Image 1 (cartoon, each protein chain N blue to C red):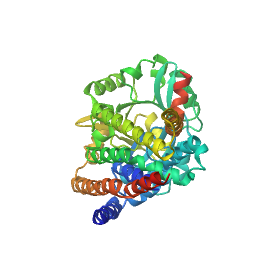
Image 2: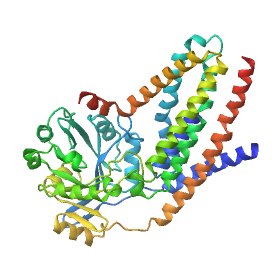
Image 3: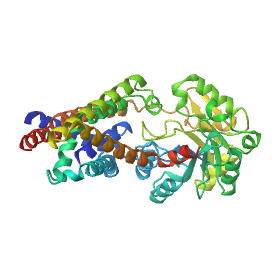
Image 4: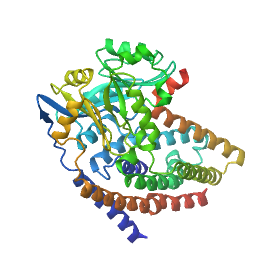
Length: 302
Length: 159
């Protein structure tokens, strides 16, 4: 048994060392072309606590940096304090953290991203009124995953005032119909094309992302670029957004995303399997097993 | 501490940054709330039994019943970590029915272990054990739910 415990500890220790080394340097240079800073952004990110998410704001920002995101918006359900905490803790190496909120509206049901707001927008308001509040605070409003279930509530006023709509979201990987529904919603108005991952710490950050063509790398520059619809989204052979900017993104080799991460993915899988086996062994034979024998002893004594 | 460590390692696996010591250490700090919530619920339920067995010993013994769900969570995390980024982010890596069935088995299994714990260690009658188990679960699960989703819940309740 002691040999198995030694193997378990060694596997976990080796995985921790290899996992830390493999996580590696997080340097990333922002692409610049034709007067634009081309920023990889994810405007729909959740964090722990308060939301169904596994990582705290400070860990979310580091994971975003690892995945070469330049901008994220922390958008917890119906509050902005997680975003404020994340921005306060963000360091100069990036990414740029914009305070946000995912308004889970109740009258009727809708999900709306408020990006660049200062205080919480009331979720009891209609979508159109909520968008008005967001604009009054200097923020932008993005329709979150507007598949059929969430898109009915947007009336003509809301559609006219919306700044952006998610045309790429992990729901498109679940079913093709969802991708059709997102495209159908995008065709209802002139919205900035947005790709967001609705990140919750499950899987890598920035799986879905938006390329923002900003005149300056700042919160103001990013929000202004979205108001001007200066965004590009790429999804498995499809491009969304401004035609000229799509050509620029292709020319700059930003889309399709470059490969070359295969070796790293295999290495990560090996680390995960080795460490995972170590954990399983530890659960079966480590402190739990030890305590189980103590439990039996104590039970006999009682 | 061991439970928090296993949880944090699994969180790093799921996040696609497996066993990054920085992430594990950080996640361990805030995921300690899970064993803390359970211990708090246990103390409430077993307050009257503290003369029979100290609360610290009682807590130690109680956590021995956590092996099944830690094991289940670890296996799920390994599977999750092996998915493509798209599958992992869209929750399609593990079949929904298998996920629910496995979770149901683990919930029942852990419930049975804890039932035996209250019966054997505290020598309580069956009805009292069942009541204690129910209260312990209600308190701890409510605390966990609150930490995860208080904002969503507030919107849901107001709807």
